[in-house]
Image (cartoon, rainbow, N blue to C red; front, side):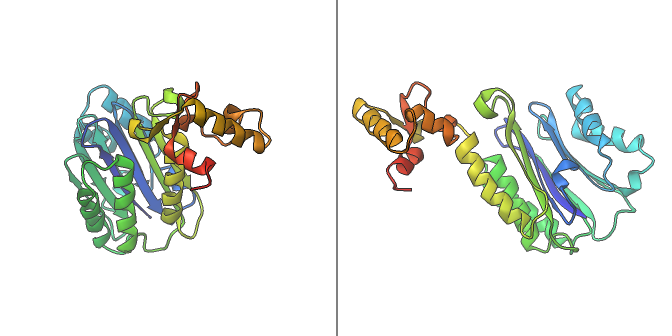
Length: 272
């Protein structure tokens, strides 16, 4: 009932899962990941206990293959399970139980595991792998995962239709304000076009929840600061810092107003 990709970034700094299904809130059941440990997708008749167990095995030094073997050896329902795991070093493993509903199967490569069940056919997994590999190692992991998911959907996806999708990516200190490791955690629980909606949300997540790069920063001169304060006052805000907080742009404007993201400046000037 689900197709997913679990992967590590080429630079070895990020781990993540992208998943879609004709199932309500698939993101609540399938994906799990911990930075510097690994990631897992558990699906078909998902055993959600696999998530904590697998990550514990990986954290103790097990490879993806060893962690997977431990999971299925200890589970009497193994024939109905489907799992993909990627470890800290990019080792990958996938399992499709013999009782999973057709079409069901998976594939692994360097740094990724792709799997699906109740799919329109093997073409879904093939298309996902091709899209992931074609996306290029210089592309962010979240974009690569989403590209693979979209390719699987175009190839037919879940044979029952569409309902939900999710994207989870972890990287050390990549979370809001640098205070956790959650780089991306987005879920579309019930939608006619869940992957399209996930794409829209990823764009918003990048704007609101990702820190500006040095190339995106514009130094705030005294003249520009005066322009920003005039803009804020015209909108009824106490000052420009208050406007930034109101609009949730804290990740895109320096707290000391030493710089502003070029996209936020474009919004201020009515150019966006």
